[in-house]
Image (tube, rainbow, N blue to C red; front, side):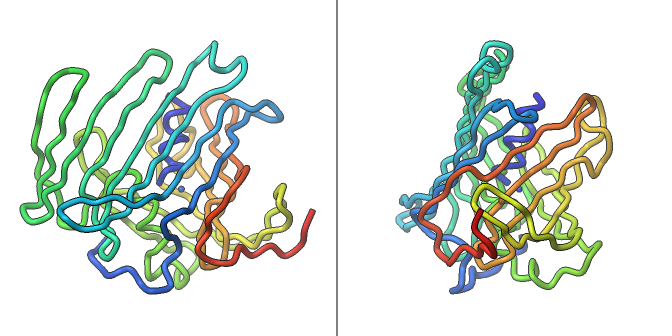
Length: 259
């Protein structure tokens, strides 16, 4: 479950509003993360933004995949697929897909949002069930949350210690996902020195995470708001994910110094 939680944060790391013309992303964006314990690669996660049609209109279709590699897939195999279809103007989700296999723990679900009635219908193909839930007007799914936060109109205006909160539907309930701004830092990466903004998502303490602020996320301090690095302090050790490749960015990627 540790890898699952970090992958979920990767696909995330709303009030209703129209996306600004200087949006942080567009169709064709793709990036890849390397997940590792120290120097050992444990797995990879990719996220790609495509275009599709829902309710007779063109929408964004985000596809995220996470998987283990090498010896890690023998100890704890992960093969996850997350997808989201969301409105190009409002950022509101129409549908999500969650198909995961994590060490034998599997889920195969689709969620269908009714934006007029503020409801979601979840079809569980593994257990052959269908349930409906009432949701808030501004609810997001786990993938659309990530894009919503990148485009949030207040992200550049936050002062240290301030937060952005989002209603996120996950595991048949709404979670108040909260992202706290920590500050700025020039981060050394394989691509060079990248100016970043630092955030900490509030996570649930327990057997996985030591503290509520155990996860730190670095995003590029430019118009892309691209995740650059994620570090999770776990009950035993720590796990990191670093940007490994990217293409199709809508805006120029700011790198202060090449390696």
